[in-house]
Image (tube, rainbow, N blue to C red; front, side):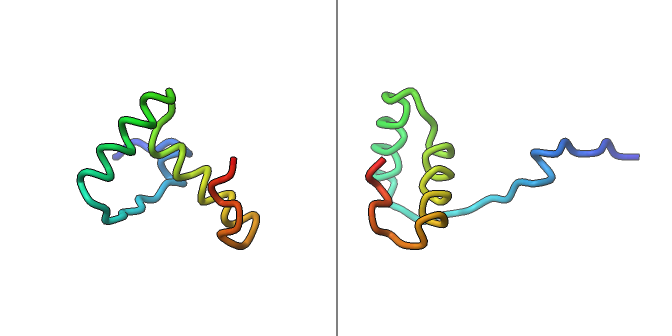
Length: 61
């Protein structure tokens, strides 16, 4: 019998985005420099986009 997955794992999905390697590397470096994670930043931007219903001010945090 398999172990039940924790709630966070059951509620997670993977979003793949195709970007250039250079852009990804720069983004990862900047996120680390800001003591943040790429995943956390993307989740924050998605929530803000959904809340505002548009791209207006999406990146003005």
